Image (cartoon, rainbow, N blue to C red; front, side, top):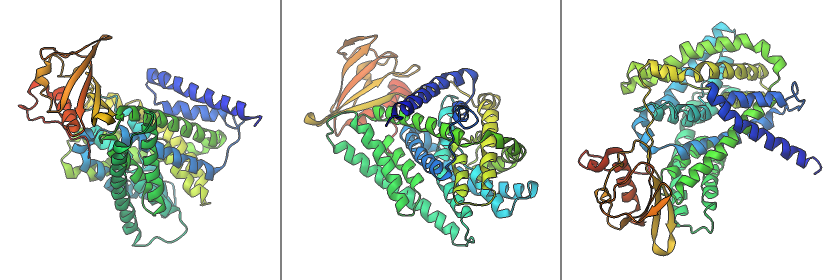
Length: 495
């Protein structure tokens, strides 16, 4: 108890330093995870002297943080963004994983003299792209088409098959022809149960009249974490169930949905900070020098051979242009996930596992610097970078006594809703625009009121008209007053 103030003080100082590091890293063009890792190393035994070498605990905390990061990723992913890339995203998280493990395993077996099974283990650990890195970097590039959707889906989905592959390859038992069937079973069951839990959770939250607004984000996040726990206990993929359940919840008609997303984003940042600092604290810098050469060899194999081959194997089914394939090959960002996965064989006492952890740590730092800092330039050189388009955000608060919902939204810059008359919104029956807040002043709109960028709109909709109202508002936001004439009827809010 006497040490509690000191521990809380250190924790708060680390979080504040990490938050400041986000802005610092943005100015430098460096991913913030490097600074988080640096903070951990600074606190470690070769820095301030904090000794932490419990591999089992680090792995457990790492998986817990990964669950929260995946929940944040699923809740903040727009179904309208990922739906056009659904097939490509699934292919990148399955076919690409198999090709990457195979290519990396054989290459490292030949170049580093690793046992073939150990080479495949290295390939499995290194084949996972990192959700935290992808979610934080890609959304600011203004990429169009299906690129962002495919990469977000890949980073959210591929952790599950990779985690299963690492567990199988780390086990001391011989591999069997039934192992691929086991992987398929775990993934299919995890995905199905994730959808089911997400839908049940969304229905329950819509019907629950919770006494405080802040309870809705807590309950939503608890559903996602509970999906992981339940499905993992059934010997299926809990990571996949967590991400899929979060994706369903984040795109459903949830009360206070935007507030929930904001809360999940904060929890996701906290999980990232804690995870990267923990991994930096765990690593011993005096051992990293010996890992530089094998890490550089593995990095070249991934960038030049394994990743391009895996992208071609997945994208060739979908007629993806070569420019997009080139960007997909370069955008396979690594982060904390490979380091967490490398702790699995170390926790099991597998020979050579300590070397793998050190190599992965160095490789993650190298690839983060090389790929993370050059992605904007690569996107521009390939002609893929576009000005980012803000989609209108619709938040909802239930009006239980009236059996209605209060929809709140802000008209973003560049929205085609700018200049549209209220009468031209043509909101469905049972819906009405009740209030406009413009530059701090509130007024009741009339039929001839013109909506402007930056306006905050309050719309009252009956429970039965809410989804139609949201679809109409999103359609006008994208296509303007002629949305229906252009065939834009609005994207459904749930997968």
